[in-house]
Image (tube, rainbow over all chains, first blue to last red; front, side, top):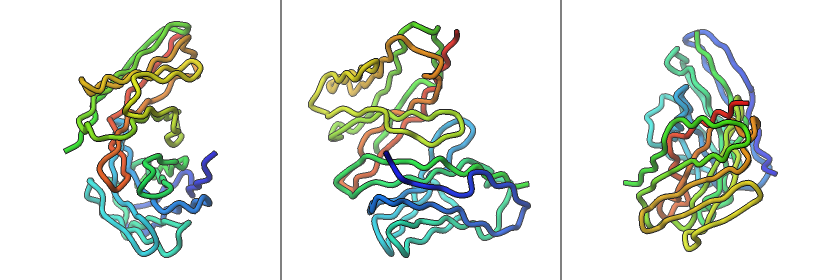
Length: 113
Length: 111
C-alpha cells in the first residue's frame, strides 16, 4: 500500500492568488513527480525530482515551481494563478532510478475563477 | 522519442470480456505497466509484465505482450461495473527510471 498524500483535495481560488499544493510520502522514495491531467485524461509531466535539492522541468512547460528540501516533501507553487491553471494535479513517487514503478496520490482538483 | 498509443474509449456489457490495447516504441523497456484510475482518484498500479514474458495472469486480469510488434494488451474477464475507469499503459523511459504514459482508455461497463 502506497503512502503518498496530497492536500488540499479540492481548491477554488481567484485569479492572481498564490497557492501551494502539498505532496508528502512516507516511503523514503528518492523520486517524486508532478503531473497535470487535463479533462481529456492525458497526463502531462510538469516537474520531477530524483532527490533532495534536485528538481527538473518536465515535458509540459508550466508556470509553477517546485522545491525538494526534504526527501518526503515535494510542494508545487503557483505564484499567480490563472484560469488556464484549472486542472487536476497528481503527485507520484518512486523508490529510485532503478525502479520504474510509480505510486500516486489522490490528486488536487484546482479551479481558478 | 518514446511514444505510447492507446484507443481512447471502450464500452462493454457487464459479464463480457474487455480487451484494452496499447502500442509502444521503446524496445529497450524492461517492464511494461497498466495503471487504473477511478473517477476522482489518482492512478493505481494494476499489473506489470517483464519484457521477456509473453503473458501474465492475475485473477481476472491477463496481460499479453507481443514484443516483435511492440503490442501490449490487458484483458479483463467477467467485466464488472466496478471496472469502469481509465486504464493507462506505460513503458519505462531510458536509464532514469521514468515512465512514459499513454493517453488512457476510458472503459465504460453497461449493466
